[in-house]
Length: 433
Image (cartoon, rainbow, N blue to C red; front, side, top):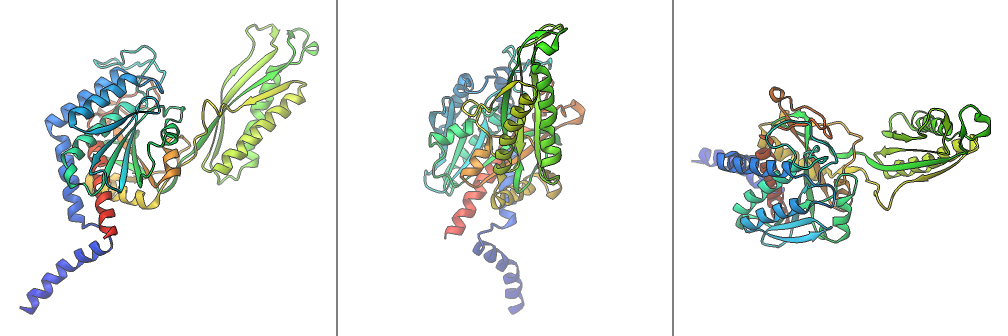
């Protein structure tokens, strides 16, 4: 009899320890993720996800113009019986599932499209000339709607409240900043977000703890010279030459002033000069982006960009003005993943996707994402989710007019969103007892 009791305690005791530490037994999490993924992959659910994504893809809208997108989301939420607040930051929505009690945990999707002409010929090609969901935001919205449906089915079991954040204006317009500015995410305890990644295979996710994506800013410089005939350059003050010198000198900030182990970038993306080959223009304009993994790095680059351009213009007897467009295009801080929340989402992903091999530890990237504003406000975790399928050639980069995604990612993303939120609330409940 004693041996039987000892054996029973041997198997039961670890589960008491896990509860005392605020960590749920692996079996419980495995069951949760399996049930959610099975539900999301059922034929009726999957067909609903695909229809939603394709409707969104056909009707892309640019930043802060997501009126039809917002209406579509609200209609779907209403059909599910989910309460929401609207409008937030013009077209944004914050929905709520659960008792309304704390903790409040958020899941986020961005809604806006890009000013790109879609070149993929298929039945559900963009119907709006010059606009396309080339960054996967149609999939992001669909996955969050899928999570909404899964969560609403379990609303009476939630140990807190899940907030669904449908955000406008991610593409360079800092929609997240405006959502926060309006107080829409006050008192949230944490937030999780997903972004499709064409380089990752379907059925995998990836991220890293700490700094993950760069902070970024924009600049535009105008150099004022004196125009003249190309045959008499000595009678003019050539702004094109001054611009050329400035562009080259800017790269020395990275190669000669930056620690090689630091991650910083200055890229000039456009130049504008005269219209004729035999005329020296009065002005030349150029601009681009600068990026760093730290606030201090961004500040330094901004300071040096202005100094270098102004001095190089002066060397050529021209004048320069540099506009960092901070009122129109807010600087994005670096996206920093909270270590605890990152570990939580990683653990959930491993259970959902069948092991550690399907959750990748990614390198830092110099792309920027306005999810970073949330990471400054509260514990945040931002993960990439794979959409690559070799058979359908779906590895085309983001922001390409030829991008396609494997729609099998939709139930995976929906289930991951829901599982991260449910298990987070469960752990917080255990930890507070």
